[in-house]
Length: 379
Image (cartoon, rainbow, N blue to C red; front, side, top):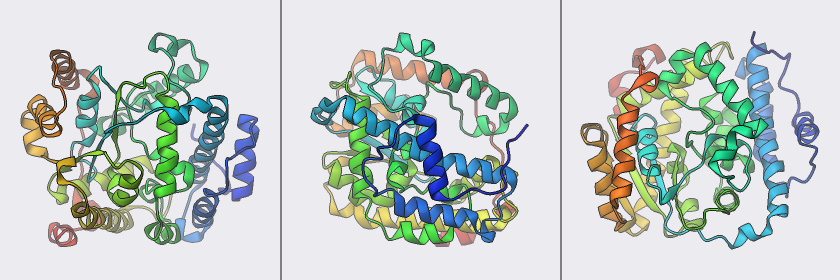
């Protein structure tokens, strides 16, 4: 049975709840407050049209960001040596949603010399424990149980984007610790937060992102980070300011397909959450969000060494996933070892089998958009 609330509550109320949940009260500064306060105001407005179920979900999302910040801050204090962990030439996979970023990210992560952000560690940042100990961690076990239930309750969502506590996931959960994440724009109608976010410098968000990686990778300092998030396109300048030697993998696909699929994902994720964030409003806001992010990326990219970038066409990737990964290694001068190739081939085989096979159906017309309108937005 879905949980419900009469409202989202105030920012102070949600912050107090995060403190009670964790038993911690050091947020490590206040830079997160401006964005999250504005977000909460938007969520409580009549325009958001949230239902009781939507109020509960959106409050949980804001609280999760605050809990993550509290837990991270405590770990920073507990493990001060994290600040000395080097992060060299990390790989960032980015592109419009539904351009193959998830599949490509998981293939690149398969290399034993690489590491990524496992889902449970994005929620509970800490130095990554040995893999054989995860099942005995009560929080990990609870997350796995919740994902198993979600697989049963929402099989369509899992067809769109399969995940569990062990899978490597997007790093927006780290960025939102600073109140900056366009994930919120894909979950509700938040126009004032959207306008605020579009004007922000994300450098502080990426600085905290890096500190989180140093913390989580404390026990694996030799392994290269492989990260993925479509929203990295939004703030390439900030990303490069913090990670000047970053290697950028940019994926490409027909934007008509991307926007239709992105709208479907937002609709499926938020079904029953709002009386206003449905249909055409999802279409309009998602088209604006991703065309803006794409234009921002295209404007910033020429400012950097193009040897740090590689472009991947979705059709070529689908036709030859392993060859595409090998090409990325060649472009960046990475060592394509027999162990790396074997691991990538194994993940590729597994992705074609069983319940993880995508089964995603969507139509652009469901969201009040036309092919021509979408293509014009990306000219």
